[in-house]
Amino acid sequence: MSNAAAASPASREPDLPGQTVVVIGGSAGIGLETARRARAEGAGVILAGRDSARLEQAARELGALATGAFDANDPVALAEFFEHLPGPVDHVMVTAGRPYYARLTDMDFEEARRALAASAMLMLGVARYASGKVRPGGTLLFMSGTGGRRPGPGLGVISAVTAALPALAANLALEIAPVRINVIAAGFVDTPLSASLLGAGLDDRRSELRTTLPIGRVVGPADVAALAVHIMTNTALTGATYDIDGGQQLLGGH
Image (cartoon, rainbow, N blue to C red; front, side, top):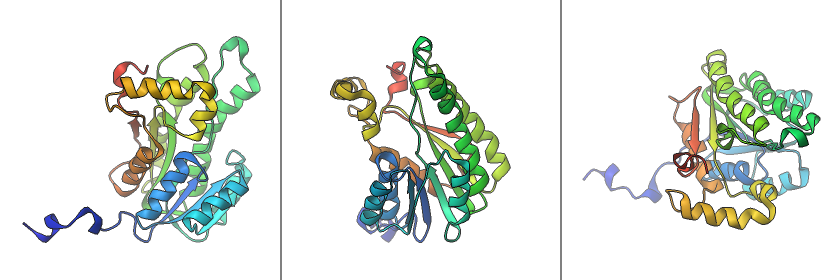
């Protein structure tokens, strides 16, 4: 047996040695877990988010290189953040944003307009302002979802956003090459955001998924973080969308 084959998992080389990963939405949930995974794989991290206190706490935990407290949907603030980044970076992950669910009769049109514009415009803004800061072969990585792929009452806005991001990423991949751009489409992930959306129904949803999902458990932030780091390291991946839902789509998304 070769030495490489005999090497234990603990002795493997890290996946992101000396690289720099920017995480927008990096103070909680999937963003924080991805930053934590990137640090464990040898990367330095730069964290951005709106909540400055939570951001500083995450930065202390991870030993972040820098932080930026701003609203990612403010194009001026977004441009200034990337303009003042300390040097080139290798990857940018964006988890900022909150889905909007409402039936037509109950819909707040201003909220709907914000939700429709925010995700697509954020992708466009990051692609414009960040691609010049990212080293060739690095990726811009955006979070989306799978739940909006099926029609249903209250899902109109989120369905439109879900359809838009993969198409936009595929087109931008040709424009910003050799920088890569990819999307992670998640089903239910057990995060503070999910808890705030479901409220008292959270435990019932967890129990349902443990019973019905092919993997027999609920998808967590660490699962998404592992996929994110893989996409960062695999330089053959661009313009594509990668699902992570524990097999939920195999069941019709229910």
